[in-house]
Amino acid sequence: MKRMFLIALMVVLANGLVFNGFVKTASAAPTKLLFASFTSDKSFMSDGIKAFAKDLEDKSQGRVKAEFSWACALGKIPEYYDLTARGVCDVGFANPVQCAKDIFQMASISTLPFTFPTATIHTKAIWELYKKGYLDKAMDDEKVKTLFIAGDKGSILLTYKKPVKTLADAKGLKLHCVPGMHMTLAEVMGAVPVDMAGAEVYMALQTGTIDGHFKGYAPLPNFKWCEVTKYVTEPQMGSVFFAVFINRNTYNKLPKDIQGIIDEMAQDPKYGLIAAKQMDDLSEAGKQCLLKHGVQFLEWEPSALEELGKGLVPLWNKWIADREAKGLPARKTLDEFYALQANMGVKIPAIGYKPTGR
Image 1 (cartoon, helix red, strand yellow):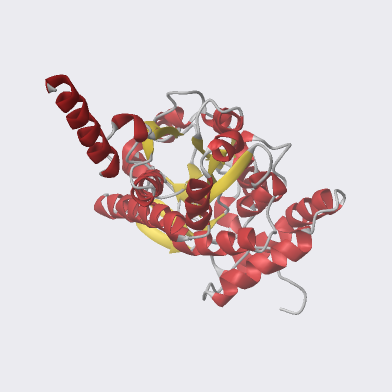
Image 2 (cartoon, rainbow, N blue to C red):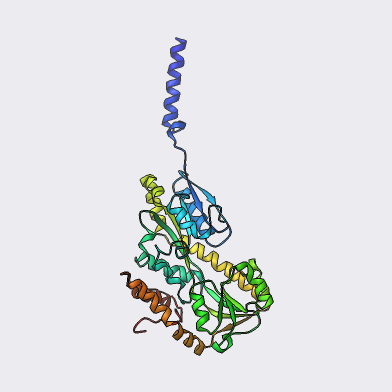
């Protein structure tokens, strides 16, 4: 009798635990996703990445947990698209232009001489292009799925000894340029483009090896470039946008309802705008650093901008021709990007390019 009573009691208790959802075998362990970035956990895009990860955890009621890898722990900056596509990380932060030039053709649109007053404006415009299907199909294919994107603010001209407002002012100056559009810009200005590592710029400015460089405001305090800058010439020209991808196989293995949560989140511009605000805040800190060091802020004279624009026409034409030869709607995409910024109140959306009829 005693034995039968104990067996009956165990059955009752077990049924009670099952009924109340407390049997450990019934609750699966959370799925862990590795979020990886080449930036630190306090640098541009980190706020957007962390917000996406937290919301995914909350919306999935803890069934998905995020782990993080920061500061190039998995590889070099250009490798992060490939690391994500191969599944080394589940979610990765990448610069499409820098990581896979043969795959991403339209992504380089932001590197052209568009003027972006803020990272937020850039992000809103590039997000609309993406939603309308103008960007590369590789952003959503069998390898990766885009979770969100955000644009940088662009680069101004910083000089150490000589103010620049006209092309005559710029003639002969030695300017540090990252290979790409700024090299062409320097040549059109009559300056001499110089390619060197970012770590060498401070000393090069001090010693007169270079006279200035093109950079955004955000990195200035970290590199102490505020100390070797006397003049800044606006507007900012040319930038990049960044993307956060999820590995397609990782996504496909998730339960359907979790996929649905991710799909819904990936349609929300919120995360890109969080990242853009972080960039704008970092840029403002950089600007305050310059003000603290007594830097003088200048603008290109209208005639100089017009002359620069004429000199940059071949750059725009080549970008269009190279992509339209591959069947891509390059001119239509440029016109849409220009119009999106104009509609947001940007007075001069681009230097050297205007859509027909404007």
